[in-house]
Image (cartoon, rainbow over all chains, first blue to last red; front, side, top):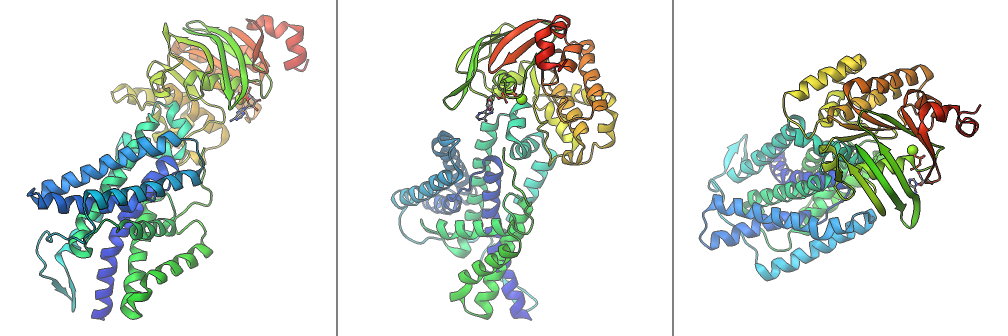
Length: 290
Length: 233
Ligand SMILES: Nc1ncnc2c1ncn2[C@@H]1O[C@H](COP(=O)(O)OP(=O)(O)O)[C@@H](O)[C@H]1O
Ligand SMILES: [Mg+2]
């Protein structure tokens, strides 16, 4: 029983990170129809920038804020320099552009940072809490709390603020959004900035547990994408559920079978679900994009 | 108020507007009638800035707006209720109206919304429902109300009668007629030429990207060529 609880806790921790990456996919997809495979690089940028700022003597909080700001700037640049100039190109072309951007960012990170594996101190020590025979790191609680805060904040943004509704309106009908006076280019820029910030925030939270290096982005992007598809691409709530499911499947497979199979198990379950529900768990049957 | 000179527009390399000249005076209801595919929607898309202009100028309230981005044109008082309604189907009726006044956050937003509900009481009943669940006629009312929320000086209406039962067509046209009392200038695009000409001050006839006739609405309604081509008489 305590074993199951242990696997559940670690599944929820990684699942929270996948959920945040999936949320990044969702936000950009909704605003622009683009599936941004550079999403994992935002997580890497958050962790790596924090590592190097800490090394330079910057205290933790400003280092984390600056790291998120750096990722934001990279996200905005990605949109302005690579995505918007290709407006009107096919979805496949845009996806290839984001894959190219992801490779470029990985290469740049190798040069600007290095090829080592890094970590920094947990926010509140490494003394685990014991719950019902299972243990949980304080940093895991930070990750979970961070994910809850991001999802709650986004929920309020989309349901309570006019700008949030304008983002939803742009996703629902870009032409109509422009006709009521929404600057849809700004909405796109905002979406890239938000996705980058969310990814980098996840990177800052999880680095003390999972460590970071220039190339962690690929695996995260694949898992996050799988989580977004599983939950139903375009649905923020689906991103949350999909992320947690992928994390839990991984943790259970690693715990009860072998950690060698954890990646494969996650993808097999996803394929099985998509076979039955082609639009994901919370996806709508038709994706209208005008 | 609104003056269009030599307007040309293309889809890819195919030109569909071949030099349109058109004038809308302050307080007028002007209609552009023409068969399906004539280029009426393209014209309104150019006016709103969601369609590239290849040549010509659009002057609105004395300012050349032909290069202005769409959201800036809304800010100047040029709003559109587009063809096919294009409401935000995933959002509530109230959110649709609120977004109509996206550029504003003052007290007038509330009074304008109350006015919209007074104009279309059915929208008040359904204010908290998803707009995608409305009937065609209700969606059309919502599209017009949403455009009015933008505080238009000049309102562009694209085929408000399309796909509606005759009784609803009359109701919508009555609303358009009453825009005059709100001091909103109106450019109405319609395939339903008789209905449009019967409420308009002046009209233009458009054929394959060109204006072929223009004049006071009552003269066009009486014109044998118009009657033969568009009124089926
Ligand atoms: N998105 C588009 N791509 C290419 N051609 C188009 C597009 N929309 C309209 N057209 C063409 O432009 C011409 C004018 O269309 P439109 O402005 O919709 O006319 P109307 O509103 O008078 O029915 C038609 O020949 C139509 O086939
Ligand atoms: Mg049309």
